[in-house]
Amino acid sequence: MIVSSSQETTVANKTFLDFGIEISKLGLKAPVTANVNGDNKVEYEKSLTKGLAHYKGTELPGAGGNVFVFGHSGSDSDGGPYAKIFRNLNDLKNGDKITVYYKNKKYDYTVTEKKVVAADDLSPLNLTDDERLTLMTCWPVGTKDKRLIVIAK
Image (cartoon, rainbow, N blue to C red; front, side, top):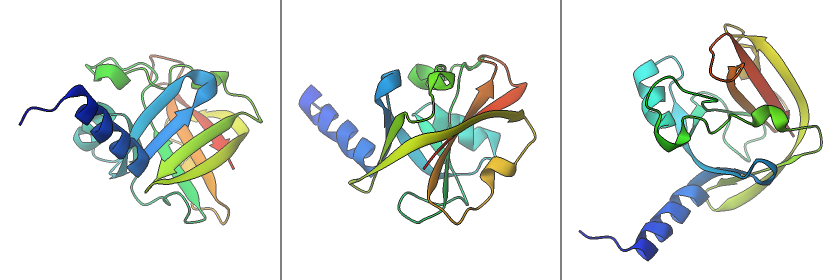
């Protein structure tokens, strides 16, 4: 089947509206693969070549808990067009807006916190009683030493 550029755009937009993140301040717009096993490197690396990944076992948008999404800041592998998608995540400040699209609904979040944690610190995955978006990437850019965490509510 041959797909025209307008058909490709329609398919890309549908995928993005199924689950996608937009951060206007960073010029970032990327699809998110839902329910990715963060303990399976093959699975999550494959997902990260297509955009961002939602950590399996955390909430989905609108469910009232911790929606955990991760992406590369600078991959040493061939991560495709999304290998550096979160390179500028540290530029976000409290009050900045993040929009998430999930199942054709729009969810607006506001950045409330930013921190760096140890690479083995799993506390950002903890379930919460409040709806929040937790974004994670490796830190400093291009290393795997620590993790940059951005929380938006």
